[in-house]
Image (cartoon, rainbow, N blue to C red; front, side, top):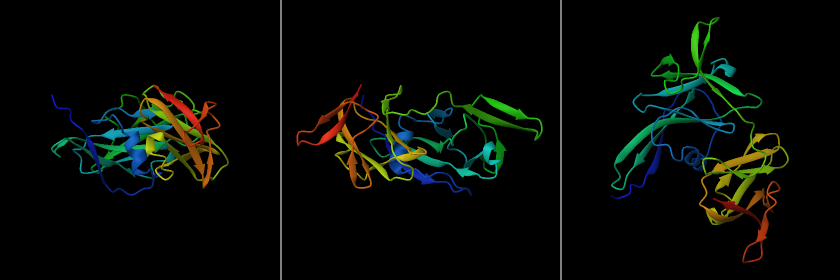
Amino acid sequence: MKKTLFRLFFSFIFISGFAMEFSDGEKTAAISGITEAQSPIIRDRTVVFTASPNARWTGIAFAHQEYKEIHNFERVNLRGDEDEIVSSFLFFIYEVPEPLMEVEYRLVVDGLWTTDPLNKAGRYDQRLGISSSLITLETPPLKRTEQLADGRVKFVFMGKPGEHVTLAGTFNSWDPYMYYLKEVSSGVYSITLPISAGTQYYVFYVGAIRTVDKTNSNRGYTPDGKYVSVLEVK
């Protein structure tokens, strides 16, 4: 049977409100492996919410923001070999702010407030008389570069607050402008990517300064003599 190759197409569903911006590369990495709406996916302090594509628009609001902001979902269409749409879903990526270890939220679907039908965990607020959905972060964020249980690699850079950090390696033809790390806490930067199995070489760029990964003691040299970090991806 012919294997179907999926291609991603993003379109925006506008709802008022502001959320942390992610690059297209980060979005693609975050939703990698998702083919339909499902329960929230928790990866360290990043949560991927998904929703049915049948609504005209869908938003999400959080209790820790007192439900004052509604953040927009985006639509992704998965296309097959013949350019036909084979699946669609809505998604929203959220970086949980420190020091929160649980997130209480509600959805807004076509103007109606509701709980997340894909998340069984919830809470009822007797004071407000409303039900909400709930997610809990079970582990603190990783402080070192490491391959995660789902096969992806989380790259971590430890530096000074407010730096501009990028990642380059054999997995992106050493392009120093493709992957930008986010400062997830003061001086801690990270990005999580699907990386092919095998021996991978990489470095970070802090501005224009090239540096190895201080959280990874495995180092080596490229054929042209450059000192790099080495990661064995299984």
